[in-house]
Length: 305
Image 1 (cartoon, rainbow, N blue to C red):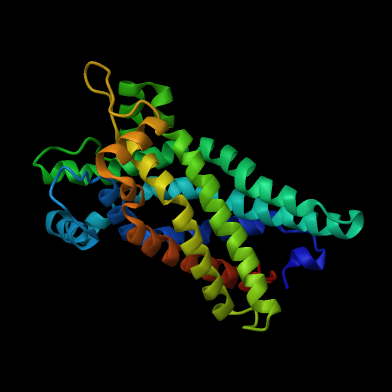
Image 2 (cartoon, rainbow, N blue to C red):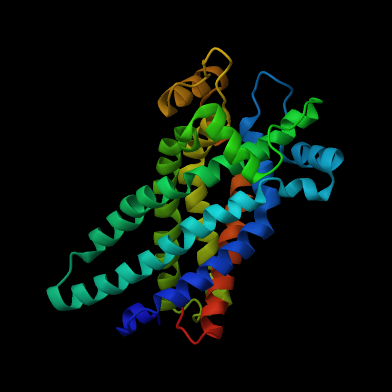
């Protein structure tokens, strides 16, 4: 039983530390899949058709195994700015909702859904979006190298400085709107789904509160998050990767313009480009994160999420 239901005051600082460690483990373990997914989403239908296996093979051929980790450091930075606060924030609010429901007679579930799906992603994505932008740009650099050109950035700090110099300070928040939209959908499919799926599994005696229950809940969470967020993820990736030409022109004027042009030029199914790599990444990410986090909590003497 979670401590939210046990009416114990949440140990916020410990949970933030454990969530950060779990996010770093999950991101490092699944980053090669994320890189493959990003390269697929940037692939245009006007060029030679490709798939996840071809993209992964090309990365190994061009850069070796370490090529799968281009952009890892800004990805971890993003999670340190984002994941601990949304997970712990959700749990702390859930604790207040449970108490409120028992004292005041309900209404808190709507507040929990609104906060976890809309308010929290909005605030945290604005903070973490620059790190996400740098991650996408560094991941996309491999495609430039494949064409015999020099990569745009030598590292995350070089990327930050060049983006500010060439595109202005506001350039770090390019694609923040589709990023927020994606975060809304991911949080609906991830946090709420894991919480309710785990509760359903335990309450219906399908499993005790153990790794089996955590695994089943994380699989459901990963699938729902992928199905909901993939179109926004495609738009976010393309918006963040584009750079203005010398005359200041860009391919996409807004996330809506990107959405319309993608569907018009590549068809509706293009919005789910990289679906299986995304699911193959979100599924293992959810599994590694939640199982690791639950184990860390147990080791620290905390009850399960």
